[in-house]
Image (cartoon, rainbow, N blue to C red):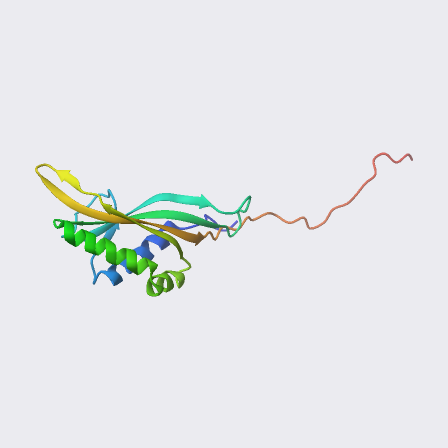
Length: 160
């Protein structure tokens, strides 16, 4: 039996990193609430809010499904994060953004601008603004069912 694990979310993360870098002149996108060094401001984080929303009934093989991703910009300027979130919103709704993701087998279903998501850190605020994106993805899982090569029918009720 071959390796057949289904959708690889790292493909989605890689596409989002490329997209955010492209639309923001090279600003980084990192996983939300992850360990490691925080990049310099401004930067963007992503979180997979809902990894699987089924849109078909009882389909397992090559299943199409949707996922919701949250993108949040972080900076010390409220105006800057709003501008970056707005630019991100426009890009994911634009032909260029949709086509970029389409080339990676990702379809933009919906983009919702969320607005500000500020955090109080000790005595000062980290300014945040973000949006949620609903994407349609394709699972590569193949249901490997063994085939029946031959069969025979015997009538056990037959009298001899």
